[in-house]
Amino acid sequence: MAHITGGGLTENIPRVLPDHLTAIIDRKNWTLPPLFQWLQKEGQVADAEMHRVFNCGIGMVVIVAEADAGVALQLLAAAGESVHPIGRIEARGEGQAQTVVV
Image (cartoon, rainbow, N blue to C red; front, top):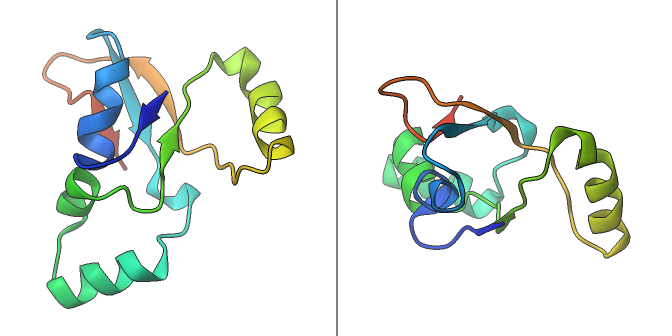
């Protein structure tokens, strides 16, 4: 689990991954909340900077084995959490960042 606070998505997720893995986060998998949309537009903030500095509406990332994803989603939803699968974990390529937002 990674609490997405200061450091945004790209700096917090690597803290919970072994060096040989990378998180591929698909930005199309959730709606950027209106506050972040306004901040990005008015501040002319690039996507990469938004992902590095802000949580972009993702407060917590829970990483589970693909085989357990369905059960994890059900349990979190039953507990009242808003759940969105936002990406996948892959082997990290040479020179690849540990979190990539596509």
